[in-house]
Image (tube, rainbow, N blue to C red; front, side, top):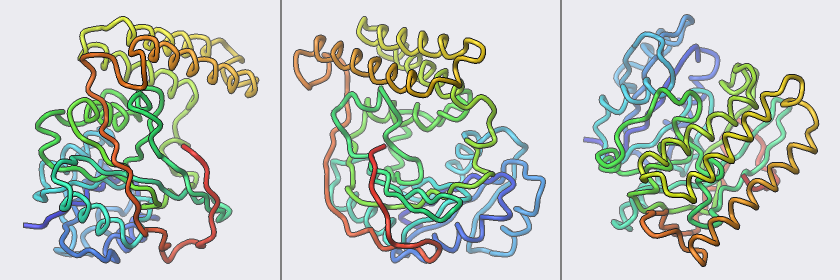
Length: 316
């Protein structure tokens, strides 16, 4: 039985999945399996998967969405640790070694994640930092990228599977659920590479800004339900709902970028002041189970064969 299961949902990924799988098979860590679920592709994705023989375990399902494909793959996976990846991104060579080694050495940690590089269509490469600010950070933004995460299989016994009804933010919802019951460690270093192109799901979705605003409200709504609707969390949920509704005003939600940037800063500052007032410190309110952040160093800056090593850093 392999130690790690690499789970990859795929939909019409014939142009990219070979590069993705090569980056996985080039890992310095060898005790892993690859599980791919094709979500009803209409291109040659399945034929490509067949060409790998028993190196890839794969299955086909009708087109339902990424979260459902991931859940199907979880049911097929046999590893003790689960790592998620997308069919158009790249793993840096030491990703699995660093993360599996950390979980082996720290049995009190359930989830480990890190930073990622973002490569533009022009080949420009930026390191996107996901370092945690405090236990509230996940309630304000999705500060965990799916392609950098690895967790123990037992986490899903506590959280359940991914929620396919939150299209595009199912991962954010899952990380919030994990933060309520699992210890999460942040690795300070790039682990994966997110490659921008016209086929990314976020580029294919219409009204992306409105969608993101609505999804934040949905994530907070579900969190409220689980936590018994505490007042401070209801205030955050209402703030997210109001932000989404204002953004739906015709010809307004997509324009005036400086206005929206300023409004976002005001909204987040107001939420953080609310949280500090409720807790009286940087600690979370009573009854809330936050992340346990354990920042550690890793030498995972080695680049893949598909991009340049020079990069600048920004905060996600």
